Image 1: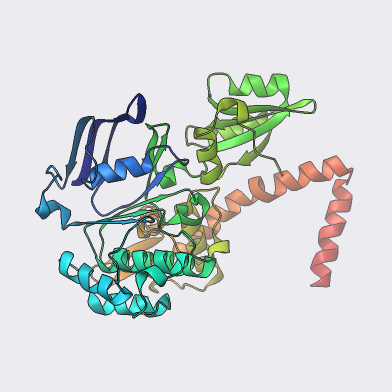
Image 2: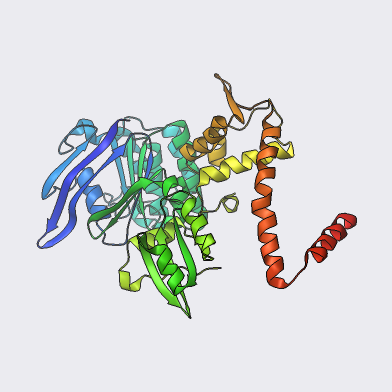
Length: 298
Length: 123
């Protein structure tokens, strides 16, 4: 499959702080990616480098096979929607849509207006007079109607209510099915978006900690509960994500190898078993070991 | 429709199970067309690639087959094949845990048999 983005050994330093620390990954064409991690993990920095808004300290980024810096051929293929988007004074919603139409070669005007209606956005209102949620909706409309081969949403839902977020997810899936393209969603609302994602990148403190297909991850981690000795026998040699005493028992969360054998094995040892959701798994991967708590077992 | 899918198991497995259930119930008769990948994706609000993976799992098992340019169809003999598979799983999935729980609660085999007969009569 062709690669839309290639990140090689990327580092971005702010003084002595490494916002991105020797990171390498690639983004394949036609998939929806989740870029997940806690606040300050380096998500936005990476996206700003990919979209040529920021220079890396070292390493290389190729977008559509080329360097993105001052490369209009590449940049016209990218749509980057971020929550802190600034608009010129006096711009109305309508002006933003007109500008987008000029910039994005695949812009669909009719679709943009259908989305304006779905999100109930007042077309002639000034951008500065929009509520936080409406501002987010405007960004989402530009992101979807741009039909850009690489569309990036950086926490696009600030201030959006649950209904509007639902509309966003629904329209994204629908339009993606009709016009396949590469989408990157950066978010910490993992539970809400995880089912939309095909591939997941998790970063923590500037490092890539996970690069895997969403379906491979789902159900792979699980928690076992039982008497300490038996739990420790079971978890020996396995990737332990968390361990917590629970009265006389111990609860341990491990990353399974994906087959059913290790679960059978746990049942045979008489251990209680509970699956771990994607959101919980990512919490484990991105929290300090001391604060990790094993999930509750029903 | 989000509540239909749980996040703790691979979603493609759950899609395959739902199609299997519809075939067993007769909702999807043999030689009938199943919804497209995009229809599944939009109904369950999941990634289309995930839906396709679930459908392909059943294609590999000979439960579904592809008609070129038309879509996916339920294969002849699919229901019998699924019933056989589910009956094999019935023992592990229902009988074993039921007996374990019965033992824990001190319910005898005779009492269990009596319960089942009572239930059948009530229906």
